[in-house]
Length: 234
Image (tube, rainbow, N blue to C red; front, side, top):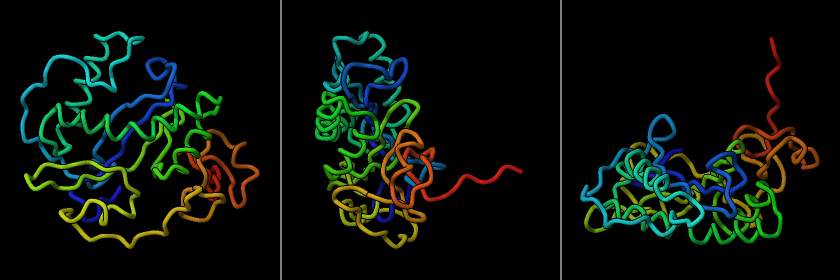
């Protein structure tokens, strides 16, 4: 992921609840906000303004009655230590408040599709149709990664926003380093309906879901149909 002129960029990871082990639960939930540091992207690690601990208690979007609260406490600490401390936010409390706010709308879409019996691909399609860019799909753990960027506030901290990667400059302003690549075409409001070279096709969970789509050959590891064939074995 390239941040362009945005000070930071990353993904909001959302679980469908269809995954294994701790990824398996009744309804979609938030995993976390992950700045795309190298080698995943060129987002810098921006320290928080304050390392003061938050008030006791779990952030609202991580507080599930059906999940062991001790596990959730460990999980939230992990998310802060690994990702939040590089997100350029004001504090730990600010980080999780932003995560919960960002996740609310796409989780609502995901929950509606899941209640209707939709699978991972259907959920990804619905989220894309709702206007959120699905940057990648984790088919093993049944997660969606939505693209996001951080916009600099007047006090120097970042406010994170969900935005398509080719809109990072417009949505999150200046402050990134390095040249900005030429933006790609804007995604269709209904999501991609076919495969073309060097562009994500429709979301998928397996090759069968790509077989009848124009130009698509298989379901790539990214979780999207692709027109690129697998390399032949030597």
